[in-house]
Amino acid sequence: MKKIAVSMATYNPDRRLFEIQIDSIRNQQGVEWHCFISDDGSGPDGLGTITEVLGDDDRFTFSPSPSNLGFYRNFERAISMVPEVYELIALSDQDDCWHEDKLAELSAAIGSAGLVYSDQRLVDEEGGLISETYWTGRQNTFTNPISLLVANTVTGAASMFTREVADTALPFPEVPGEQYHDHWLAMVAISLGDLAYVDRPLYDYVQHGGAVLGHDKANAGLMSAGWRRLDPRRWREIFGGWASAYFDVFLRLKGIAQFVIERCGEQMPPARRRALDRFVTSDRKLSGMLWMAFRPLRRFFGRSETLGMERVLFRGILYRHLVAVKRRLPGSVTRKAGGGELRAETEVTAQMRQKVAPLFPVVSATQPQRVNLLIPLIDLEHLFGGYIAKFSLARRLAESGLPVRIVTVDPTTTLPKDWRRQVESYRQLGGLFDQVEISFARDGKVPLKLSPDDRFIATTWWTAHVATRLASQSGRRRFLYMIQEYEPLTVPQGAWTDLAEESYTFEHDALFSTSILRDYFADGASACTPPVARKATGIRSSSATRSPRYRRRTPRPWPAGPAPA
Image 1 (cartoon, rainbow, N blue to C red):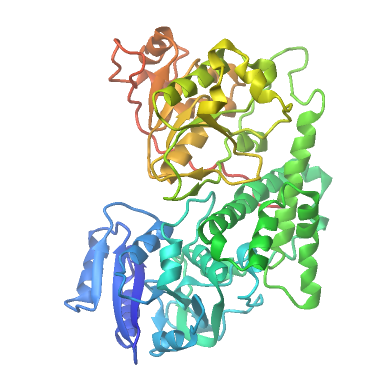
Image 2: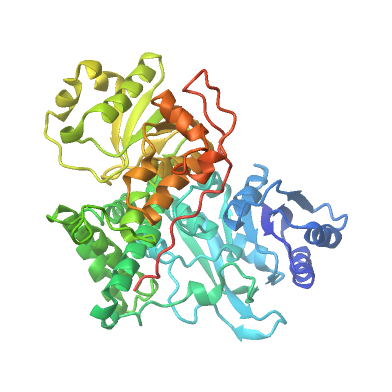
C-alpha cells in the first residue's frame, strides 16, 4: 500500500467548516495517510481553532509559518513539509468535505500518470447542493498542454500527484500577476508525462465569499466579450485593457511556460516541447500571433475548454506590436502646446507599465552565480559618461574575480554586427566582452537564467523596479543601486515622478557617483528632496559606497490596469 501525504494550507479557518474537513480526512478508507498542515500566519483565534480540532491525533503534523506567505507560497511550504518516504501527495483546502473513498480512488486511478484529479460537487456553506459537477460552463481537458496553460482545468483540492512531480515543481517559480499552485503543478505534470481523471465527484467543493478562487471565477467565460465592444469612444479604455492582457495575462503564462521548459525540457515529449516553444515566441513572430488568433475557432469543433482566452492573449500580443510601431513613428513623444516640457501623467499608463515590466527569469541551482548589472539597452548613439561608468563598473567587478553579466531590460534595438567592437573602442572598455557576459532580457529568444544566489545592480530608476523583483525571485531582498543623478527630476511630473521616487524606497544599498549626490540624498534641507530621502539615516560620510538605509516601504504590486476589453 502506497503511503499518501495530504498537504493542507490553512489561514484563520471557519471552525465549523474546518471540523467537517478534518473529520472527512480522518474518515478516509483503504489507504495509509498523514496530513501535513502549513498555516499562513493565522491570528490567535485561528491557531486555537486548528490546534483544538486536531487535538492529539498524531496523523496530523501542524506547522505555523513565521510570516504570511499567501496561499501560493503556503501550499509550496505544505508540500515541502512532506518527507521523501511518501510516494503520493494530495492537496487539501481547509473548508471542503471529502468523500470517504477520495484518496483510495485517486491512488488507484493515477497509474503511470504524474497527476490525477477528479470531478467535484459544488455546495454552499450549509452543504446545500449547487451542482453535481464542476463542469457546468466549460469542457474538461487534461491532454493538451497549451489548453491547460491557457485555461487550467486542474483544481488543487481535487488532485493527487507523484513524488517526481513534487520534486520537479519545487521551488515554485515567481511569475507576475496572480499565481496559482494547482496551475503550476498541472503544467509540470503534463510536461513530465500524462494526467489522469476520475469522472465522478470525490469531494464537496464549498463555494463561499472567502474562497480564494471559486468555481464561478475559474469558469468565467470570455466568449461574450466580442469585437462588438470595440467602441471607438472607449479607445483609451480598450487600449489599456489590451495592455493589461499583455502584461498581466500573456506574460504570466509565458513565464510559466518558460519555467516548465527549463525544469522539464529534457524529459518533455518533443511535440509538447514544440507547442510550449511556439507559445513562448508567439508575441515575437507573426506566425505565432496568427496561431493565437485562430485558436479560438476550436470551439466550433466542440473544444471549448479554454473559454476563448486566446482572444484576450491575441489582443495583448497585438498591443505589443502596435506599441512597437508607435515607438518608431516621428513625433511620438507628447509635448505641451507651445512648450517643450513633457506632459504630466497623473495615472499609471500602459507606457509606464511597459517601462517597469518584470522579467521572467528561470531560477535554477545548475546555473553559476553571477553579478547582474541591469542597464536599459545598448545605445551606440549615446554611449558616453553614464553608460561608460556602468560598463566600467562591470569590468572592474569582473577583474576582481566575480562572474559578471550585463542585462538589458528595455526592448532590444537593432545593433550593427560590429557593436561589440564599437563599445570596446573606448579606452576604458577594451576587451570588456572577453570578461563580461551580455544578455538581452527583452528579446524573447531565451529566458534569463539565474542562480538562487545571484546579485543585482540597478543603474536607473526603472531598472531598480526590475531589480527588486529579481532579487526576491532569487531568494534575496536587497540589490545594489548605482545612483548617478536624482532621476525624478528627469521625467515628467505626476505618475512618472512617483515611479522614479518609489525606486529609492526598495531595499537596496546605494553606490553614488559623487559625494555631492550622496549628500543630496542625506540632506533634507532641499525642497526638491523626496520625503523618503529626508528620512535617510546611517550614511557614512567617509565613503560614497556606503548605503543610506531608507525607510522600508513594501514595493507596490504590479501597477493595476483595466480588465481586458
